[in-house]
Image 1 (cartoon, one colour):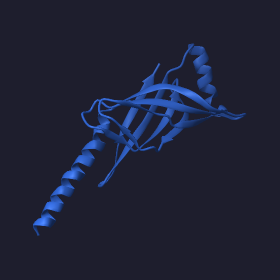
Image 2 (spheres, rainbow, N blue to C red):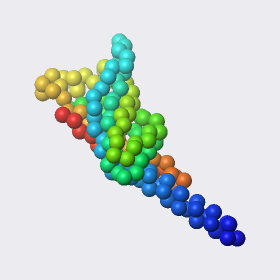
Image 3 (cartoon, one colour):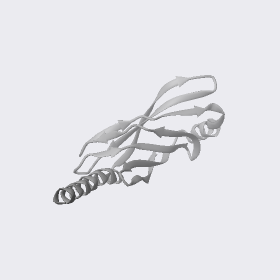
Image 4 (cartoon, rainbow, N blue to C red):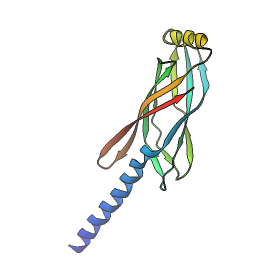
Length: 146
């Protein structure tokens, strides 16, 4: 009986540490760090969206996945997903680079707006997800870059 209670106590403590490591993701800072072209085709362009994630916490955190919408000058241009489980060390940064496809037919208004304004404002509105033994948890993320 004592062994069972000790095992149950140990499992709850380890599970609590696991959840704490995951929930600390909400304190991380997300910053757009540029893009790189992956493929150019007649009807679309594939871009890697480089996002720096900085962990200010005292413990490592894990980002399981991220879903987001990309806006240029407030015009929706693409959806993106990053499904990589990424460990972010305490006090460190990592770069995630989800790939998005921009259909030329859908980005026309954003291109005209960029030309008129002599520049572009990029915005990523998304959700980051982290898995726990109790299920998936999430919280919203917004990144704005001018």
